[in-house]
Length: 275
Ligand code: DGL
Image 1 (spheres, helix red, strand yellow):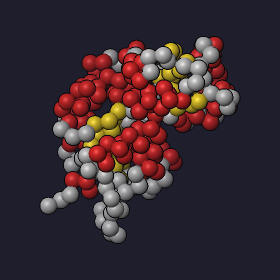
Image 2 (tube, helix red, strand yellow):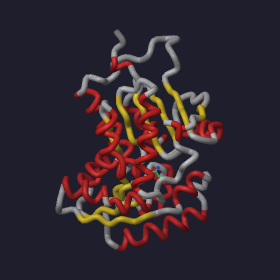
Image 3 (spheres, protein in one colour):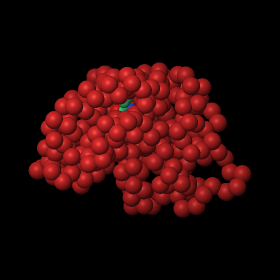
């Protein structure tokens, strides 16, 4: 009988952002196989309603379940904020999002108990980070900042660019005015801007990348459920990473290749609305 622990982990995001989560999983759980779905036809999620994001997430879950996955990582803050309860209730296997692990890390990092959250408009509106942080440490005050223009800038590859720097200054200013000592990069695209943000805020502010903590939480969860893959795939075994998208497969594969430490080969386009 096949060992369930040898099956892949399913990850999804609205597009390329979740690759920052995939990168941390590859670094921290090197034996695991990954099936990634990027909803490149319907990005951005951050400006959509809860109802729409939940519907998209459910379609992606149904697609991932056709790929024999042993667990699901919602590698998107917006989808985690809106859809984690629905996906957890329906998936029939362990599900983890990025918000809870990010909140744990932020609550631990802050010394002055003032945490800023940069995220999409939908994530800020859901108040998911605020609620999760309050559950961990009710003494922590949170300050949300919706940053709707950052995702298109990152998707365009405008990282260390004067326009992006100007936009970041506008978004960071209100948080710095609130004297936060910790800022959550609460959208999976933002870790790609980390160096620029670090330059703008100086080195006294903790920058929280929920992707790192999600990989650690995933490892713990798989260990608890006895689903952690213990050994690497044998020589000549099937290729351990599969990438699917809803549009622009070639562009996605090029981008994935530029940020992942593995050979991406190709991405396959899927008619996701049929699931
Ligand atoms: N990757 C999504 C997130 O983490 C943001 C991109 C989008 O708006 O779709 O929230």
